[in-house]
Image (cartoon, rainbow, N blue to C red; front, side, top):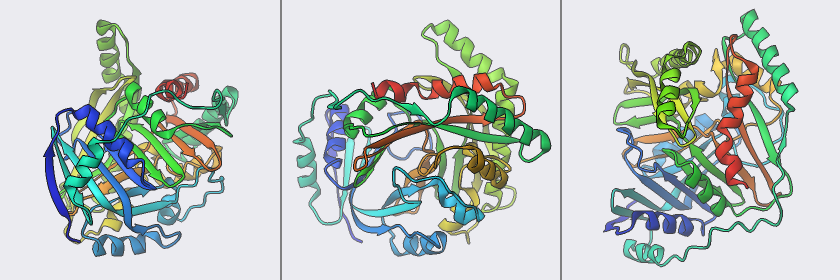
Length: 427
């Protein structure tokens, strides 16, 4: 498809991003991804916006066998998501929990309009409208106030009582002791029924509290993802692929000296380093299936990165893709991401299905884009609010890596720490 492309200087970046987001929300399908200016050598864009689907890919079966056809037939911008339950096709598994939000297992679309923002330049790629008219339309967007119009206070419920959570962690540790797995990412759900929120205002509040490098506002008709993720699943630039799993969390401290101590303690924590290196090994194994022999390596081990609520331990693994590898083969080899399953991956996912009480669906899945040059970047969907405006159901999930030496009480407290920004955004 031949697009009309033009670039425009921006005077007020923050205002223009807010106007872009508000404008994008007019459309039934939109994806707004914002890096919040985090310094990252692998980010190609500060912000990306896609609206209005020209073509849609969302099969319910034989997904991966059809994915390459869609990928090859559309040498264009592609945006969308991979739901966690794509694992069922990849690994021959089952999921019996109810899908209350309604996101499909896989959804990709070719947008009518794509806007990329780098520094103070907005570049508009349009399939059927003049970019100048789109730019002027966005500049005229009138922003609403920041007051939520919720009809009543949101009352969150937990799918697990604290005691149930602690008991399940101890049961998981018995599986680890028996050798069923050596690490498992266990998550719990918090939810609210019959609630009304303004998704755009709630997202704006969430990212004001917790701006993160892989945040996104993602909408498919009545279904919303409000995401403040700090984690990259997989990125490709030319022939190089990168994955940056997060394992290891410490709280922030308002006192600078004590905050530095938190960082140092996280860096030195043997348990956190052990969890991190387990997932690094798993990712290296995944990438070795699709990369040239001898090219897969850990570019950075145990890097400490700071976000508004937490410090995180992040490692970077990269490799050079084999020339014959297809996009579907890349996904089959690497998805779901090891940081959200545990290891070994297949057995961990079986135990997750057995002991978790809710369907993850898009949580611990991924949202991202593919460029016309066939580069791509996908996040890990965590620290997120999910909302269905039709059935008025809202939920979020939080979890962490469980090893044999994990302290169940501390794991529970870490879950609450990770959810703090979400809880604050819903107040």
